[in-house]
Image (cartoon, rainbow, N blue to C red; front, side):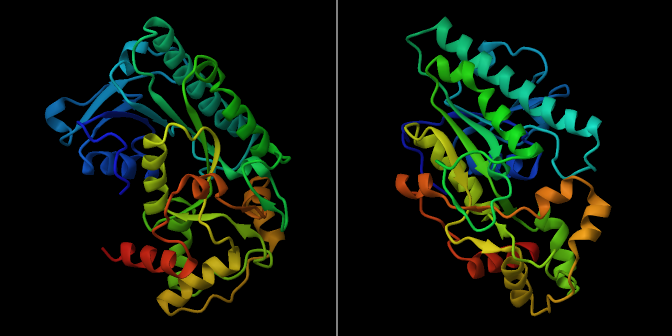
Length: 321
């Protein structure tokens, strides 16, 4: 993992969404490097004796306010909480849940950091690394998308714009904020690939609607390393594409996994079938997003899995542990 910029002593990193795929891996990585993790949870906190070493819990309400004192001793906040994009079909009611779970929670965190900064101007200002997604760019065919590219169209693109805008109270108060536009996280433990991998093992993960859509992939290992890198490099602000440096199409991703598993990947899933099953959400799954990690590369981040074959090998090896 990336070493902390200041290793003079352990620091505390606050994490929302700590029970999710990325949040739980990040919490472990924070502790592995000798820092402490403060989990902001929506339930009653567990007793300290029931928690792993280096973990504390504090209850928060994403739709309300957060006592700035909760964040007084943290060096950084990684805000990952939000309802799962692909967990349910996108009814109007579900879309409202997706919006409110991100906008309300991000605004609550940002306001608490702003009040903390205003309340003690001489104190160190925590870093905020706030979640977003490459859905910001929408469906852009073969266009290469950097952090300077314009926003796209569609529900998810609008949601990501609102999501990022919700950090404005913290930014206006001088908090260094990075918006991590996450791509498709490759992991055997969950996320989109967690659902796809069993099909790959059966030789059933062929092209989706032709397979030519660009999938902005990144391994969970590199995603967590990038989050730690951003916590340590406060000078990196604004949007950051959390994607691998070698863009690939959906068919290339599934074929790389199938190659590693020595399975075929030929049976296709037609786009019309996906639209019938998934409704509006199919537009996002079939979207082509050729995002590249210019900001990370310019800042000096080194990917452990820089190409698809290494990424696929890591995923398959991790799935066997």
